[in-house]
Length: 471
Ligand code: ADP
Ligand code: ZN
Ligand code: MG
Image 1: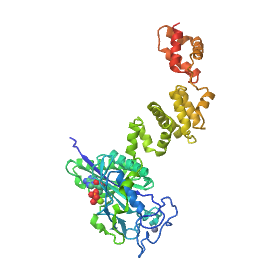
Image 2: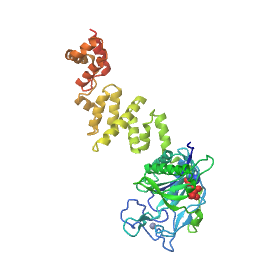
Image 3: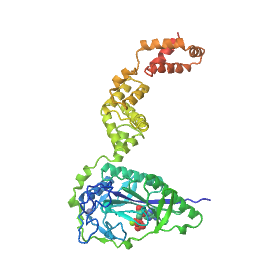
Image 4: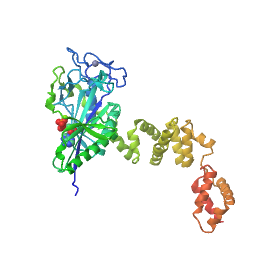
């Protein structure tokens, strides 16, 4: 009989803050600098006698994240030295925070956050150049926030979605580019399983994950590895350790057993003053300066604009939502808004994907097109044709519809002439209809739509066919 296992996941997520300068010196913070060891100075290289000067903007950015998450913002905060010896850390210690992080508590996607603190990034070691390691210190001293969650996540999917939502928040707040492929955001899941819901199992921590997909895959892999050990009665082989992720093999592997906090000999950095954040920042000001947050936008799109699940496309894409909202200003009804959103999400994005030279039409022209649809001046078939022309060359859809003969024909007299012509030509369909197979009338309407390049109003056409055929 198979037992139930309880997976537990807690995340540690680092994100480089996109400030102008580094955390404790005036060096440029430029993740795109390609020339190694150019943005460095005696401070971030750890030369003796230099003094760090904290970057106020970086502290402000962490506070903003905390305010967005409904967290507690500390009044008293300080920086600590985390001591360890590694070539990418030139001082022999990393400036971080230990006892007094800037942010505690709060939640994201319903998952409780333990803390968010600020530290400095390390240099970047390159091991792929031969029998030696090279270090690029451009990254050393770049402000890095670290968020730690409570062990309250229970599935790989939830963990990956948490990280996605955090990325979106950081981008919305403008505090980090949070690109995982570039290492600007690094997600380290802590994972355990237990056969007792009231007891935690031994956890491992997985590193080197550079996409949301690998976060999910690595957690799934770890959970099934652990479960297999449990099922074989070998759960004591699960040891607390750091594991790496092998992207090619899609497996984790043991890297090293975990050090304890006391190995780091944390102590307050005597070179950096303590902070009283309430004296440095006006928290109410900061709070009211926050932009619309992803979950607020999600709500507004559903409640105020009446959109469904497709609103997520806009929530995830700031530029697209800006476009959409400009269009919405020229619309009056929720039906129109829904039509506009459908055309953007399915048609426009579809065309952009297929044709790299296609461009979004101006919001003005696009809203004229939506108005033409709701006024019945054009059929949806015709609208799609016009949209694809507008995405090659942006122009007024009314003129375009006239030129292409796509204006919907509502005029019964002229439609009747075409109906008569079709009835005289489609003798077999007409015969079937008259002998009782009434459904072929749809085929006749289809012929009509083809003949008029989709411009005939199909409801009116259907009505005329019925009238003419009953004569
Ligand atoms: P450590 O002292 O080993 O760094 P922490 O208590 O600081 O451990 O927790 C680090 C991360 O691990 C946090 O995100 C926390 O939620 C998570 N965590 C703690 N215990 C477990 C566990 N048994 N299973 C999964 N995650 C855990
Ligand atoms: Zn520097
Ligand atoms: Mg810890």
